[in-house]
Length: 178
Image 1 (cartoon, rainbow, N blue to C red):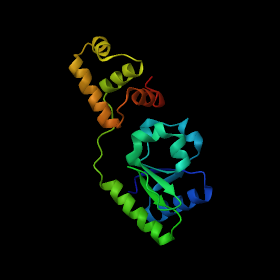
Image 2: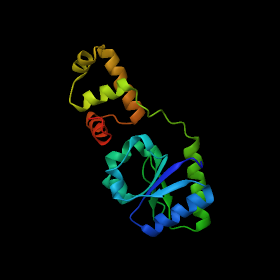
Image 3: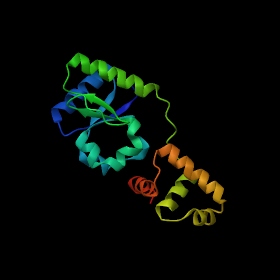
Image 4: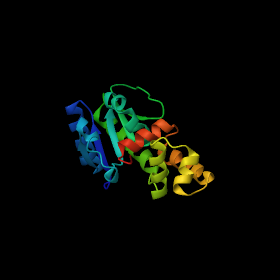
């Protein structure tokens, strides 16, 4: 895990400093504290392995984090449960936090994740989807069959975890594809 890149986005500065200390000192993880400006400078090519975020950051940037929900751990002040998202209770003892982090990091490290690297053709299809083209128009423009377009769309949905056209369009805009 020492080669992992972790971003901490929380409005509680002391919490961020403490988490960074524990991650770097106990787990030898390269952790960085970021602020809200992180999203305007986001670079897909250096995307971190994990995000530690507070609930306010999650809600304010939901479209950014939804396709990355396997990469986020939400910091909570209690035993709150957020469906399909890992959480870390920060109001427990230091040793309990270290144990919880150890379990979360081990779980995250062992999870089989589908590849999120898009092929150049998938990026082309995504760009055309974001521009509002229908399958037939995409097939004609790229000189491929409609079945091939459908396969690319299925692969995009599987890789990104986004099922709606609006979600795919938003993803394309946030990542500079359109």
